[in-house]
Length: 130
Image 1: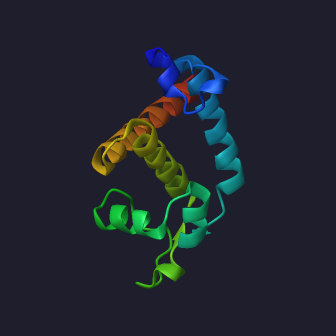
Image 2: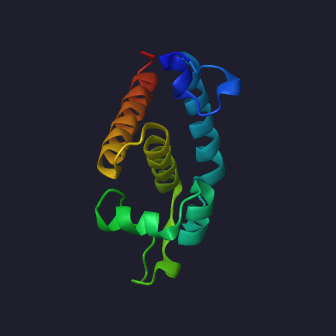
């Protein structure tokens, strides 16, 4: 097994190249944006969508690694609502922690950098430079 084979959790699908991975990630982000842009998820729905227990989210929220819910009418987590940005960030952090055994702080930092790269690429596209 080569180093590139370890990038994909399912070796039967073959190695994931950076170019293909970037294209797949961009396509998934676009689909998620279109489907979820106006939707708000409850804490339980977000946990199910990302396959994490509620404690996972509570730990990262209390550590400041995830932003507060988009809608937080009370301190009762059952009333919290999360937007598409939170969904994308949680999925990214889950992937980084699972696939690369990253500690939560590192996963949050990488998620920050991924978001910044996406923002800069969008800015370049709007300027016609990409």
